[in-house]
Image (cartoon, rainbow, N blue to C red; front, side, top):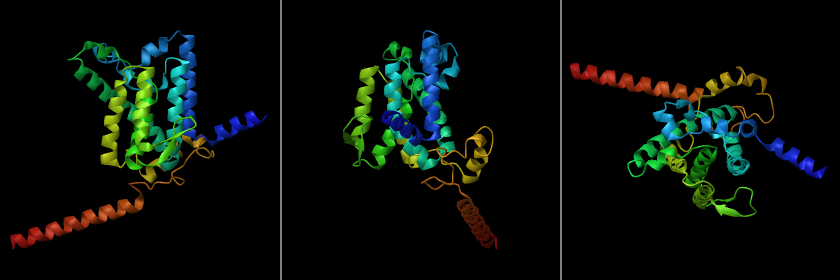
Length: 268
């Protein structure tokens, strides 16, 4: 009973969006095994098929497919230890938007990268991008760039690494499991841009917009759950909250008024 109680406690500590990823990935893995990997072959991002055969749906949800039990275990373990912190910091709705938007951008960068490298070797066009390794790697990169000396536990292993060593260690392990992981290079490129331009998280939505989604279908049925992180519970402030919007419009109005006065004085 102690083991069952511990499993229940761990499950209850996982946030809603992260649970959705775990459950959906597990269902996709089971369905893929039952269909002899046919779903994996259909949805995984392979540049040759994505572009030349115009199978653009491969850009949308390859992160939910992992190929086998070994891959899904490693991929979701890495994602689990990063995603919960991100979801608690920014909320469940921004987290949902983030994982789908990040995946789309990563896949586009990955395809462009493969086509660029195809001038050196055509084999890169047949490489595969799948699983949540990409998004996990971005979360790790942002953590390493912001708190590079802070120690954190390495996946589920009984030792810790400084944040700055986490991404290279993870990159090495992922390439040992599946070589080459060019999509991790695409993820690293995106992480650097996101850190420089958006302070480590791009999906900082307005409080009003997030609240509206929380009370709309289908989230209105789940937003009262304890594991659902609403906009009122987040640790980070919203970039476009109402107070800042008012201040922004006021500043723009002042600038416009000042410019108009200067133009009038010049005409006189």
